[in-house]
Length: 174
Image (cartoon, rainbow, N blue to C red; front, side):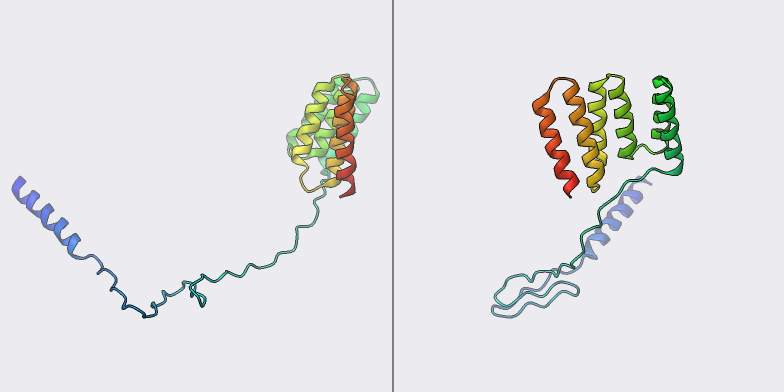
């Protein structure tokens, strides 16, 4: 039985090798190659043609906005902060971030609250987080840079704060 199984397997493998496609025929010297369907035709002189690139208009500038829910939570956090309950204000802004974690405006709000609580290092980190998320929105980038500048100034790093202010002004001009 093993002999017949082995013989059947050998015949099957042998048949697979017989059904291969024939190799391409060699081209005669000086003959023009036959174009492959769908392949670009070579330009005169042997150079490959450049594919046309469709011109796309630049994307419109992005503008971040707060959703209705996030806006209500920011307003609530402002009221809590003004009432002196900065812990609850922080929790409210963190709740807004759970709703919209990729919105740089919320990170800027939380950073401002951290700065008001004299947590300059955290405020700076939140400014950098906002900056990373604010691509395409010059106003949001400028606000993030201003938060970073204020946090750096609060930590006595005035030279770095001046650089951040320059970045803020450049972003606002876009």
